[in-house]
Length: 66
Image (cartoon, rainbow, N blue to C red):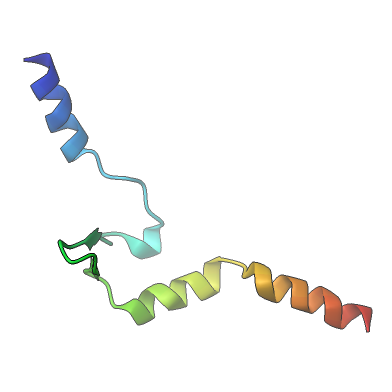
């Protein structure tokens, strides 16, 4: 019985998400396609605003040296 209870608790537990992405759900279907309940453009806007691009960071430092 204890193992069944643990499995139920795992299903109910949701990962923490940023407040701007509340309700965001992403899955991979049987064909290996990524499906989401949020528009890809909205996800990209969030990432642009909140995540620094490491590739662009190295380019900026090269521009500053010149």
